[in-house]
Length: 470
Image (tube, rainbow, N blue to C red; front, side):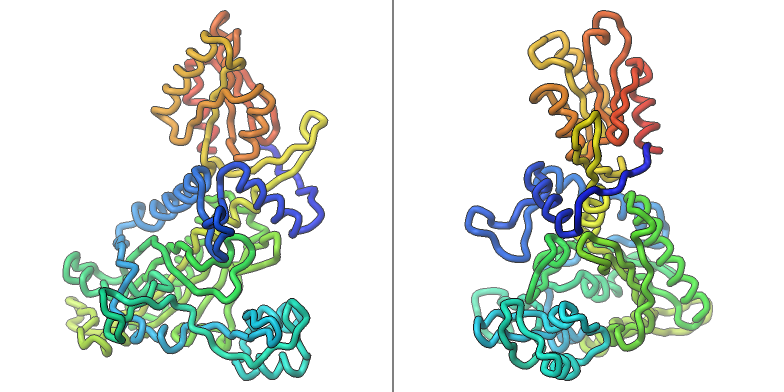
C-alpha cells in the first residue's frame, strides 16, 4: 500500500463538510427523519454505514469476547426497573450544566460556551462555571446574555404500561453498564466463573443531549460496546496490571481498525475530573477534524456499582473465594467504546484528497478490515453479454470465500473506479476481452495507488485474500 497523502483541504471544518456530503451521497449516513426536516442528534445508517459499523462491532467482539476465555457476553434490556437508575446515581446525578439564552430561550451546554470563550471548564463545579460566565460576560452563540448555570438530567423518562404514575416510571438507559452489574449474580450462579472475568455487551444507549453536534460525535441515540471486568481487590498490584493490559488492548484494537497512531492520545484523567466512582480513569482522545476529542475510555470503578445495587436491592452481590474461604465484593475495571465515534474516527481518518492521472480524486483510505466492500468486480463493458457472464462467474466464486464483494456494472469504467474509491473499496477486479479470449486473467486495481496488476484467474482468490489480510 502506498503512503497516505496529506489531505489538501483547507480546514477541519471543510473536511467535515466534505465528509458529511460523501456519507450521504454514497449511502453511509443520512439525517434522521430527513423528509420531515430531521430530528437533532439522530442519524440513520445506510447500507454502507451499516456494513462499516458491523465490521467495527465484529472485530471488537472477536478481540474482546471470542478470542478470550474470561469474557461472558450479555444483552440486557434497554428498559429497566427505575430503582436500577436510582441506585446507580443516574436519577440524582446524571446531568450536564445548562444555560439558557435569555432572549431566544435556546439552551446550551455551559462547558461548551466556556470552551468557545477560551476557558477550560474541566474540573469546574456548576458554581464555578456560573461565576466564570458572569465574570467573562460569556454570551450565547446568538450574542445574547445567558441565565444561571443549572444541572439538566440527560435521561429520557418514560412510563411502562398503561398507568402514568410514579410507580410506572422508567428510563431509556443512558449506558449499557448497569445491565451488566444487575446480571452479575446471574453469571456467577450460571457459569461459576473464577476471578478475574468480564462481561461484555453491545447495545443502544440514549442521552438527551442539550446540544448534539459534530455529526455523529455527540448524539441522543448512540451505540456502545462496554466491558465490566471484575477483579480481586486483595491484590492491588494485579489490579493495576490488569488495568494497563486492558488499556493496551484498547489501543491494539484502534490500530486494527486502521487508525493513524499519531492521532491517538492517552489522557490520564485528573482526580478532580474523574467520575465520583472512579479511582483511576484514562481517556483515549483522537484528532478529529474539529479537534482532539474523547474517543473511548477506561475507568477503575472499584466496588461502587456492585455495592450500590446490593444495598438497594437487598441481594448479595459478593464473590466467594473457594480456595481462601473468603467472601468479598469484587472491584470492576470498565473499558468503554462508542460505536458511532469509532465510525466517525475511521471515516474522518480515511478521508483523503489527491491527484490521480492529472485529476482531483476523493477516496476513503479504509483498512480492508473495516471497509464495507473489500472487492468490486466489473465487466469492462456493460453491453457485452460474454463479459458480463464471466464477471458474474468470478463474482460468485469470490463471494463464497471473501466477505464483502460487490458486482458493479453501472456507468463507464472510470466512473466505477471513482465510485469505489469514494466508498473505500480496496480492490477492483476488471474482466476484459483478454480474460475470455486469451485466458490472461483479470486486472486488479489498487485503490490507494491506482496501479493495476494482471492476475491469473486461478490465483485470484489467494492473491486477494493475502492482500486483504496484509
